[in-house]
Length: 169
Image (cartoon, rainbow, N blue to C red; front, side, top):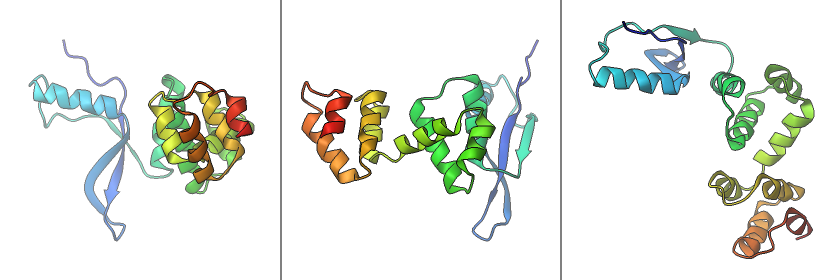
């Protein structure tokens, strides 16, 4: 008895610099399934030329495919959602479009976009569990990345890291 792939991979054609399809595909949604298939091939439990069901996406945005798949099934790290919402805004979607597509309020989208606008080094610290979500939120009171970093450098090794203290600084 062999179980087949339960959910198709979502793929998109890879295009060259001229916008022409190369005949290869990327997997913006279904990366874990793809890696599992690679493991099956490596362990010779699946032939490398065995057909795999795929949904070829043409319209829309690759980040949206991944976000939609993961936000509905498994909780993403909040930072992944912040960055995906930013990518969708950069691709031309409105805050209202994003809210409607992912069943969240417009104010939630705005909050996530504010969090995504914090200095990249602070986002990295948050991703590495170096600060809490509440601390990260406190940094959104200033759009100045240099000032955000300066405040973080001042408090990161100290004991006074409460969000109210960060906002005040």
